[in-house]
Length: 274
Ligand code: IPD
Ligand code: CA
Ligand code: CA
Image (cartoon, rainbow, N blue to C red):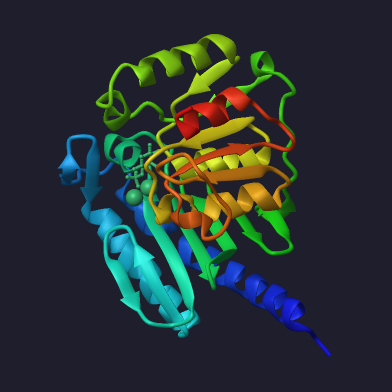
């Protein structure tokens, strides 16, 4: 007799397939739109963009999810909450919209499934590289090959991917400049890629040793958090006050993720504001 855990594993496998298919379904439209003339609007300010393609891709993904798994509700960056089913889908139709809008080929689609506050499946799809990162409760993969991350033992051998500090961090005072300066001095390199979801996927792949961010939203991190964990890395989530969060990770705004057993306490301290 299958027990509850077997059932959950089976469900997570199925939801991983649904997430990956939904993310892949907008590949052709995003490739066609990329570097074509497009209208860009600002949302909260000049550092927060949206295009007609973000909205169109999200509509297509949501339709796909609700059709493939009707017992669903969706939280999308552009369309908000829809549906009332048991599985919660977190959808970022384009993570890295600034890159997309400027013709930089570094952005992705991120889709995650949450069941009873736990992340159970996720897909991060780069439509330009045509590369798919996925995870469920049994593992993590890149294009079907298992992912196993490994991190550098010391900071001077490690690469961090992070867009920190954003304008909002700098607006809080000089602390962001000081802490960022310390990281830039200590680590091999701190790279600003412009897609938090791809930074998590690359950390899961072991191409980077660490990534961190503050003030994120559930759709930015849902898929990447699970992919990092299932690739053998660590995803540490924190509240806005810097307190550790262990359930509903997607709702925690701040995080640091490490490849394999890497551990750089100075990055954790920065994220916690300590
Ligand atoms: C953004 C990206 C970026 C991060 C920003 C996010 P968007 O998402 O994840 O890496 O630094 O904070 O808003 O707006 O391109 O979906
Ligand atoms: Ca995003
Ligand atoms: Ca987005």
